Figure 1 (cartoon, rainbow, N blue to C red):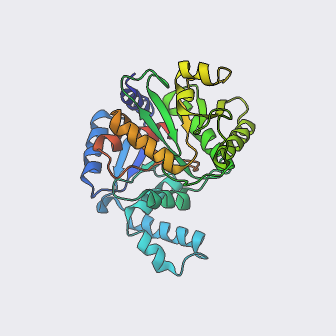
Figure 2 (cartoon, rainbow, N blue to C red):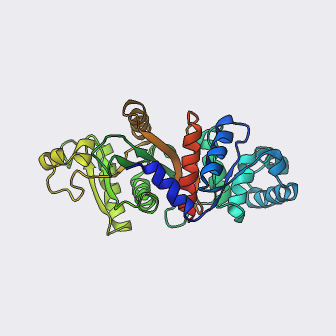
Figure 3 (cartoon, one colour):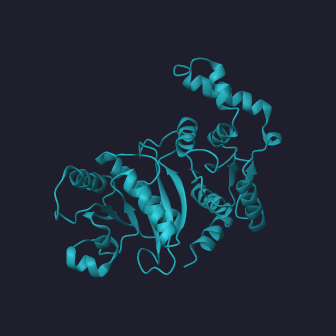
Length: 309
């Protein structure tokens, strides 16, 4: 399945406006050309002439009003808004854009902080977290080689409740963006008690909470990754698993394992990695790896547009 072509077609079916604040990065400029040529989003490259002075001043006042108890003075806010990143996030907050994409020239923490402060966190999920869409060529596992990996970008050591929230948000994103029936696996170095340890206990508790949050979800854990995605291994290690060795949403126990896994999959299996897609926020936005390509930026824009539909 050519998931990239599918995403661009889906985004083009109902055009949304996505702000691109990193206008000085040549990859972002090239991504804009791709988006405009294929017509799958209304992208706004926030060059200096696209920044409306009156809007910027209004955004500064609004932001300062929200966080003045945490800021030394208004000049601190003005320094933040010297970067178009915060202007883009406030555009989304106000509804002048449906989402934003950044991270080619900013760290994940910078992008996530701007998104959390300006867009806000959904009450239902309660945390900001992230996932990657991973598309692995010539792969029989997942959904024809397509997976959601989470969290690979934001929460270093998630609590059991945070793991559950990551799982629910990831499953919902996979269903909306990829059109998959989510089959969620909480990953570990243990399969159903084959090992013991506090890290395993965390995963087991996260699974319990996730089942309470979303009772109809196909979900299981703790599972080693081969038992999660390989049917033959699943039949040996845990034949009664509802996931059945066909997981397409993989929930990692911590950021370290998730980040290593996505980068290894991307480089060794020549997979496409789209993200980190920020989740748990009131409106959609996407971070990027600073090693991203123009195509990555364009495709994260398509995903952000689909999420806004």
